[in-house]
Amino acid sequence: MHLDFEKLNGLVPVIAQDVETGEVLMLAWMNQEAFEETLQTGRACYYSRSRKRLWRKGEESGHVQDVESVYIDCDADTVLIKVRQRGGAACHEGYKSCFFRQLDGDQTRVVGERVFDPRVVYGKP
Amino acid sequence: MHLDFEKLNGLVPVIAQDVETGEVLMLAWMNQEAFEETLQTGRACYYSRSRKRLWRKGEESGHVQDVESVYIDCDADTVLIKVRQRGGAACHEGYKSCFFRQLDGDQTRVVGERVFDPRVVYGKP
Image (cartoon, rainbow over all chains, first blue to last red; front, side, top):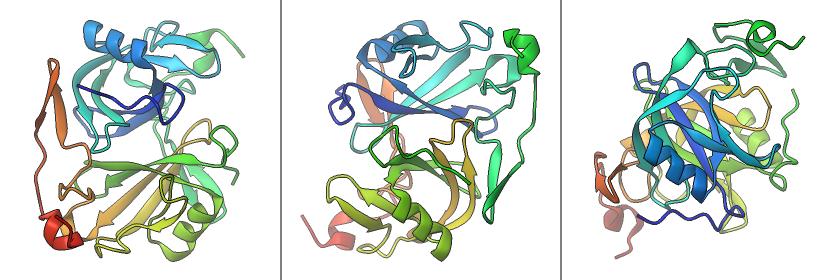
């Protein structure tokens, strides 16, 4: 199975979707190594563009993503994973989904459900 | 409302999700102009990286996407749109979703539903 990592300098975008509710939880990135680790372990491992290293989702918060199934798009340059989100929240701001803000005219309003307080989970103000 | 177009040379990834079923249909890209046109018209307008121009989804096939709602992620660098997919299929290969192939060991198998024959819609072999 060939994934096209060339279009974006070794990375592919990865959509994580809640396997039970269908809610889109987040978009992150994988390089070849992260993709292979994800398949081997069954847990989402991304590549952090800001930290420039593998990012084992939940390594700090404990909120790992168990991967139930993996899908490749028609151009083989994007991945969709269906996951079980441990801890109930994918977003580091404590929301279930990173897409917790809906556009409303020129503004956004919070429509997502806050599951945890990030100050408690990450110990930062 | 500020979207971060800087991380990827003027583009943001956009996830299109079926507003009724929750199925993830595709991932594409928008530049500022495509994003603004999408908001103004209520129809998905992407930026085609291969054709290097605006891509009004459905301009050739007629399978436009009516946008019901727009969500911005925590980092403001990814967009989620919930759409009504006209014609029943988002993928140029005739499948409802571009993610019609599921990973199964080292292989992929087609799990998606084929809605149309692309040879008929696009008039190409």
